[in-house]
Image 1 (cartoon, rainbow, N blue to C red):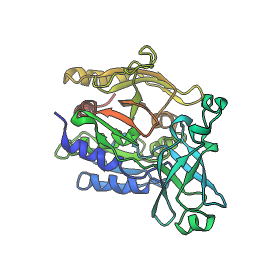
Image 2 (image 1 turned 180 degrees about the vertical axis):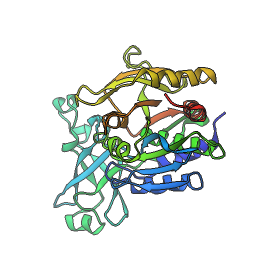
Image 3 (image 1 turned 90 degrees about the horizontal axis):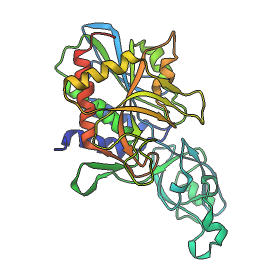
Length: 360
């Protein structure tokens, strides 16, 4: 049975605007969801939201971080006829950006809607049909006829733009699909975990964080670790799955509904330096908790991505860091999909780990 409170939290967070660099609306929604659950709130200079629940020892800290930001776009030019041009913010598959509903967050906070377009299929050449249109060659149509008319809407170069899609549960089942479950799913898990820990007295202080700008370089991990000086940093994020056609299970071995992935290793060969070889004492402790409480889990080893744990691990004199990841289909598209059972199992793993944590 789906936890309706967890689902409601995911829905509320997913359906906010939070493209990397403009996460303010999501941050406000996360603060609202966290009301009454923490002892202290801090917003750091980058905009990350830190919610602290003090334990018996106020100085010993565990940080659990889920990023608030989503991939999106930024307007770079408005043409004479009112059409907007844009560039990617975060890693995109160019094929997913054409013929989409879009929303621009203007400087005043007003939302302006548009659609992306390209040459109609009817007049495409054979060569056109064979190639993917790059994001830099697409445009967004605001239904205006001049630059001045578009600017009168409040739209200017430098405004962020995201997918305008409302999330929902597929056919009353257990699968939720939304534009930004990466990583509002993780944010929702942190809220629910803190709800269940509200009346618990923990040995250590827990810092639940909604971080910013993860999708453009995992930029928050190190600043958070430097500020909070934790003895353990866990990124709570999503991960790739291999249980759909065309995705080889030996390359993406996580499955939907089989529980969270306990991260052993990640690396992005495109960026080169990013990645986390998680110390075995972290993975062993998480696995021990999962087994003790009969919580399904998976062993995650992946390439092609990373989390804030990467930059956190290398901050200061070095920080013990790892990750717990929620399986997700259709990563970095407007139709990202998670299984609510996996969300619940992730909450259970975090809650039991924190209640029983004595140190590593």
